[in-house]
Image (cartoon, rainbow, N blue to C red; front, side):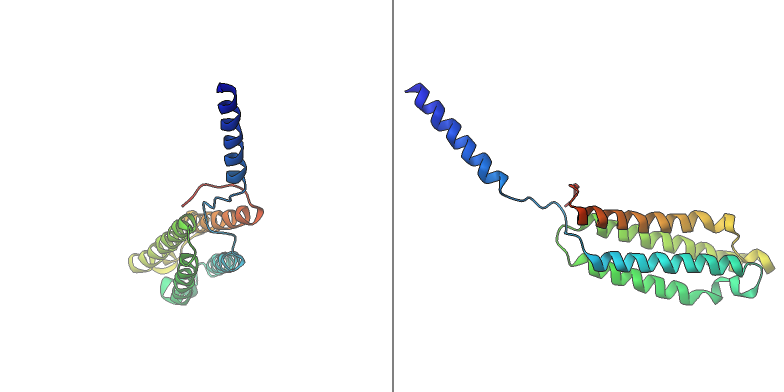
Length: 161
């Protein structure tokens, strides 16, 4: 009788394993091509702004008040991205990364504005040395979001909620 119970227990455990093996546990939102496109477009605008600031260094075009259009559009694009990624269940990691991206942009903007308000002449411009850490932060943020989306697309198992 003991042998029969052992076999029945083994069969039941095997059936449970098979049933559980057929279940898919989703720990995060699926890949979304629109998120990838939106983030890529943001990175492209950041790169273009960086180049514009480098080429306009020492001219009136380098100051914050001449660049507010870039900041307004970038903040609006990030808000669109935040709304977009917020509609997906289990997308907390991406939502957090978008928040960090917005913080990086705000840091760049604050520095740019502060230079115009506190400096005179060419010193109002951000040199490459001054702006690189902020632009690197933007690139790291967009890169992290893109890597996460690509991992989702490949089905790489990732933790999340």
